[in-house]
Image (tube, rainbow, N blue to C red; front, top):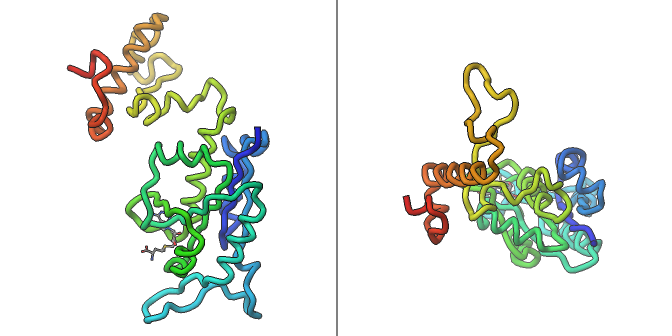
Length: 240
Ligand SMILES: C[S@@+](CC[C@H](N)C(=O)[O-])C[C@H]1O[C@@H](n2cnc3c(N)ncnc32)[C@H](O)[C@@H]1O
């Protein structure tokens, strides 16, 4: 099986290195199920100051990432992929990252994630090089690196073989019937006077499965009723 290959175009590759070194993503890289690399637009700057940003036309505060070094970096990162990558600009103006979008991205073998800085990137790069824009949510980060790292982490969890059976993503929130996950408990059975629900210690697998499903449904109904809106009533608890 060939690895999912993700390049990040960033002025701060040292930030992205954090996601490649440890945890689930680090392990995915070690097992060659995921490959992550960085390309720095500064390496493609052409003036003697290695400039990658300039003042905005029309005035106003801040700087804008210049088209030429950024496009060269995107082209260089793209050329290193075996197939034609999908180029994603991490942007607060993009479509919001959701579980279904993560699943869609996880099916792509080649991704280039562009991390903006300052006031953003020259719009002509968006028009010429970007296939889609993805946002983490309705707030503004200082740069796209954290957003790219979130995509890398969420995608890595969905690559077959990355998570062992014990930590399978199938039981996570949004995956099972689009609902939130049920509550989890571990030892001790009584912590500071608060006991684990009896059913979880009963050894009755059917009863445990039903309790978990009921809890997941109750949580989802309370916290995220929107997730249940388009879902047909499949379980007996649904009708209650
Ligand atoms: C300070 S922001 C620029 C925001 C831009 N002026 C705007 O208001 O749309 C710098 C960079 O951070 C990244 N960024 C900021 N917020 C983000 C979000 N919610 N999701 C994804 N990327 C984000 C983008 O790459 C952006 O180019």
